[in-house]
Length: 251
Image 1: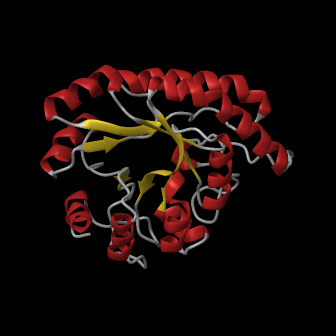
Image 2: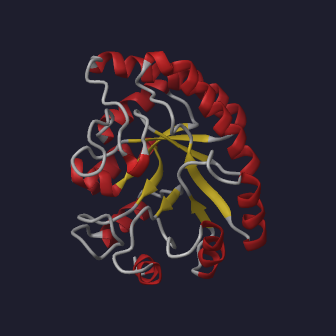
């Protein structure tokens, strides 16, 4: 979402030039993975995460085998890239993050049961590969209408039940500010299962300082909680990427 002013391959040197050590992207099937690996070597960068499940839905029992197989393939790709994290979701996302199927015909209890079965199956595979699966709840008000997993509590309950060192939640400050607010209390309550964090301000999903979130206090809380995971800036620059980077560095 940053440096989209230039072609994908040109964003790597801008990432390094801007002082970042890590980068992340969404889908991987449509990208030249070997080229990404080479660009990371040239610019001394590391892939922090990418989407591990994009074509399939975790809540759909009919897609269970396909979902697991795709995540397994994503794990192998992550190992090749020396990437420690894969982002996973309850529902498959299409272009611009549109939820492909809302599954209104499936009861919520069944969706939870299927998600638990899938994650329980994937847990030993992730542990063996030493790749973390980060389960992300999304907002259903602005960006992802129809997505099943839409709360920190819901994601944390499933992850705690699965009880794997390599399955955590991705806490997206932007999504969860829209859905539930209460960011600092939420971080304190669920820090034991938070393995990855995304940051963008609300409204607009722009850089810190453009909206309503007090990121200075959010970052202070993370320091006090000794959070040592990744913080990714998954945001759309309000004006341009260089200005957004300056705002990011100011927090």
